[in-house]
Image (cartoon, rainbow, N blue to C red):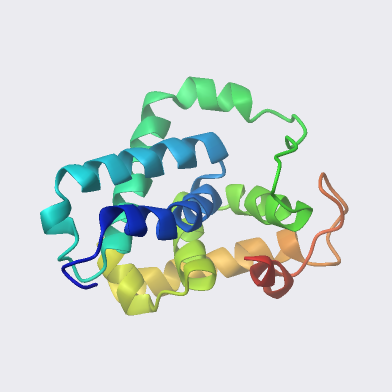
Length: 177
């Protein structure tokens, strides 16, 4: 991105998109919003450096993801209580397909979920995901392969009807993003 990139424009252009991506990775909209907001605050503090990075948005996404993971570790017991067999909340502005996809993503490992979101929803290459996550490309491929296999029965149109209506295929759901 150019050196003259204005922080306000960067924030406005990327905030909602990054929140959506982190939400898909974490399954918690409030946590995603908080983490992305904190990541942008940290970027603002060192904007002269961050704006010169090859991909400032990847920096924001990485920081936000790490903040979310840290918050998960601190709140493990509280999180468990909130994720009991309760119905999915109605969230304004989110389609039933989006909620179904996030619900399915919650059921796979965090590493697989992150790789799936970065590859299929963000559109990063395997090499870009490896760089952003600090993992070898082979590990990213493994997470993608295992994540797809784990997701397949959860998002198939033939899966059982659950909260949020009939399940949709991964391709159909990715089109919603």
